[in-house]
Structure formats: structure tokens, C-alpha cells
Picture 1 (tube, rainbow, N blue to C red):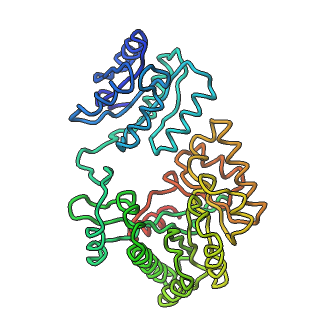
Picture 2: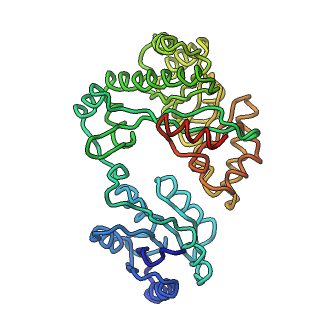
Picture 3: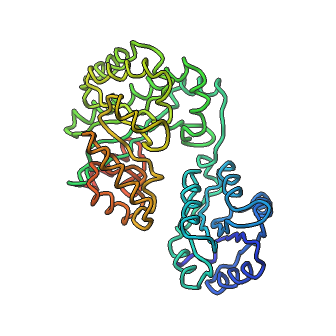
Length: 398
């Protein structure tokens, strides 16, 4: 790797010998900036006192005081965006559990190292480290929570854009559909993801309804353009459980879609499974009527929330999306692969279209295709893009 000298590494371990041992190996691998911490609290102090970001954390999970698990929870809350490697002398299954927990927190885990660490295993980790990882001026990656009035103003000023992330057929590799993802085009911070504002929007029923209709309207208008150009696609639009507060919602969405001359069977509504237990009878009523009007219905983030079997038994879904936590590193981790394979088989047994999202590596891509899912989505295929970028990407891909 050409840019090793630019990497800034923080090692956390309560064993002073291990700290010096690993830092010496890093120096042999031409890493000049290495920081040491003997527990989680010291690690947080080091992170908070840097003017430049730490690119890589090498973190033991078994430490006195604040252990590695608590440390990971803290840096997840602080939206740490660098890469992380976990290493420990604990049992393999416990180390893997810590890895899965970190992924669930949204952290960028590169893998695990068993002690004693070797020069070759450490070098292999560094070779996988993409640079540059971080841009100090990239405000869009830093989480900010905005207030309701700012968000309402953004809607009034038409500052909410839609990005499109493709899904490809696992069998033919052809692009079959796109997920429509909201981004706030902020004058100061650039494009901001919904993580920064969706929790605020969902607390205001009128606002979440206005926001979702805005995204749906823009998405189907773009689909209309593409269909007229002969581009054969479906779209997926995320809707919140907070949207399901009125029985005439299927008519409202149907009118929006028809106003763009798009058939409703070209639109899939994605609902996060974590919220499906709320207002069961009303939810079932509304979702059933969506199906009657031709919409597809997708369980998003399957396996992470409300009782999955009950969801599949009662709700009229047409698609199951398997969450990235059951995909990341599945080609190398036996337990993750078993859960992934079982989820795909379950979805197929119910006759659902099975989408695996969060695919980020060649190995995981090949695995999910081999396991006979229907569609694949993730950064390995493509990132979310604006319409013009997507068309250029599609042309290159084809």
C-alpha cells in the first residue's frame, strides 16, 4: 500500500507489552503515527484530543474499567467513521459476537485478529485499508440533528433530493430496480442523509406525511422519464410506520403514482420491520389495500425487529430485504452465513422476492448469488446516485 505513512492508528489494550509489541510491528510496516491507550476511557480521550482523525482503531475487547464493548458503543454514539479491527485472546465465537455487535452499531469493522498478532496478519489488515478514508471538509458524513423548522424550510425550498441505488438480478446481473433515498441538499453541509433528520420528522405526523409524499412524488416522476426512455425499472420507496396513520393512504399514494402515468405495480413500498408491531389491525388493513391497488410491499431490515415469523404469517408482503448485519463478511463467518442462508430460504418458501442489501465485497456478492437470492444491492454494485449519475453508471455497467 503506497500511503501507509499517512495512516493514523490507535491501539487499545490493557497489556503494556502487547501495546508496544503491536506498535513496533506497525513501525516496521511504515506506520509513523501510532497512539496507545490502556482502556476504553483512555481511548476516548485520545480520540477527543485529535485535530486530525484516527484512521484505524485496533481494539482489544477484554480490558478492565471501560472494556472494548463499552468503548465501541461510545464511539458509535459519537459517529466514529474510521476503520476498526478487533483483537483479543478470548474464544472465537465471543470475538465474532463483538464484531457483529459493532456492525449493528453501524461501525466500519474490517475484521478480527486473534492474539498473538503476527506481522503478516497485521500487514494483511493494512493492505485492505482504503485511503484516504476521511476528508476533513466532508461535513455530510458527520451526524447533526436539525430542528423541525429547518426541515420544514428545506421542504418548502425544494432542498430534498432523491438519490437512486441500483439492485441487480443475482441470476442475470441485469439492473432490475432502484431504491429511492432522500438526501437534503444543504447550503453549508452538502448532501445530508436522513440519519440527521428522520427521527425529528417522525415525531410530527404532518411533517412525515409531507416528507414521504414529496419523496414518492419525485421518485415516480423520475421513473416516468426513464420508462419513456425505454429504461425498464421498478422503484422502491421507504415509508415510515408513522405514515400508516390514515385508512385512505392507499388512495393518496395511488393518485400520486397515477399522476405521473406510472403503473402502481412498478412501485414497491419498503417498511422497516422494527416498527411493524404497532397498530396491528390498522397496519394490516392499510397494507392489504396497498396490495389490492397493485403496489409491491417489502419488509426492510428483515431479522432486526418485530417478530419475523408473525410478520410473514399475517402481512401481505411481496418482498423480503435481508439486513446488512446478516451479510457483512458472511463469506468468512460461519454463523453469519447460516443466518443469511436460512433467511433466503425462508423468504423463498413464502414465495417472496428476496433482496440482499449491504453487499460490499466480491466474496459476499458471489456468496449471496450462489445462495439463490433474487436481487443484490450494496456498495459493491453501486452507491446511491443522482439521476444523471445513475444513467451514466447504467450505461457503463451495461
